[in-house]
Length: 91
Image (cartoon, rainbow, N blue to C red; front, side):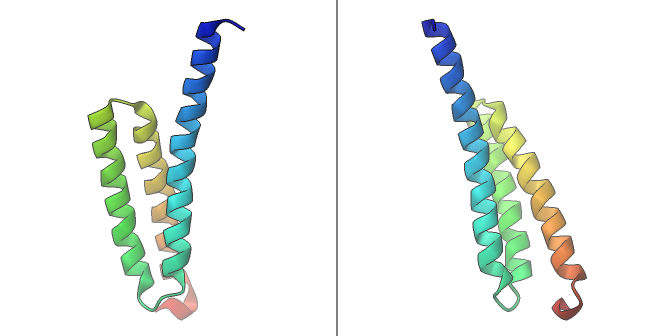
């Protein structure tokens, strides 16, 4: 395996780690706020902050994996918030 192949493999691994850590962070605070009274609103607030932070890091670091992380956090977080609001005992 050449040096270039090792470097590219490490970059690919780093990309997936960034995305994975962002999804893990989203899952963690979503589960924490799921069991708190009024936690859905706090969760929606944190999703917004998380997306803005990912976009800011994408601009600052000039790395596309942060943009992908922002879109994934937004899509998963939004669908989670809608699902929580649609539950019968959440109103």
